[in-house]
Image 1 (spheres, rainbow, N blue to C red):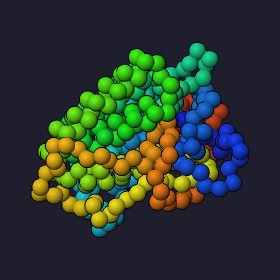
Image 2 (cartoon, rainbow, N blue to C red):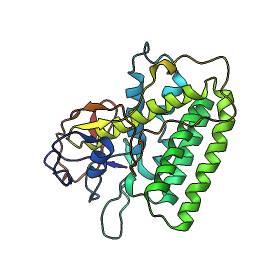
Image 3 (cartoon, helix red, strand yellow):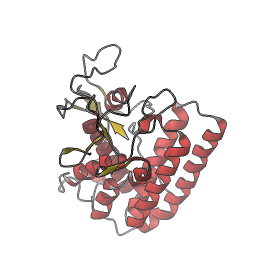
Length: 281
């Protein structure tokens, strides 16, 4: 789940922010030292916001965003429902031995790999293109995790096995998708951008941030009659990870997007939906 920073809650950044920072750095800072009574958003509801953002893209600039692609973006975190619940029926946050509530940043590989697998299975049920971009999304996250974290050898092996399996699965999905490898890569960038923007809206860092997603609009065209090759081309990876690595260029800056009106000390659990912020009893 994603915790939401309260209006008067300081953002734990050192040194203090005096210029736009990478969006992931700001989001990560909001997820530290949380308590079970803090406001939070289930992962699946955050993904629904991502889908709403993607649906608002200009179709003249992004004509290839078909209903299948938009539904994939909307449901890309559906596998987290057993862990987080949904806005109407949220589950209590997972808690460490220290009493600290755990956000999606702190989940163990055994937990997030199962959630990712369920999310990919849900996307494949939508269609091959949907399955391809959601699989690619989580495979890239797995790669960032392998480069950025010191997991046990057992966890490292599990993440590597997940990545290898998904790469094979993407190769089987690509020919049936109706898109070229380049188009699938750009749809993945749309998913990544909407994912990070939604996380920014949900977590409410309250600081200016930079998004580093490179949109090649010329390749975001309608489905190509010639299917993609069975070998998936490498996809762009503009730092879509909670375990950051150097991002690509082509930044687009954004100031604070949502003024938070809630206190982080509220006793009830809360959730953000795509249309409003609602209290969940």
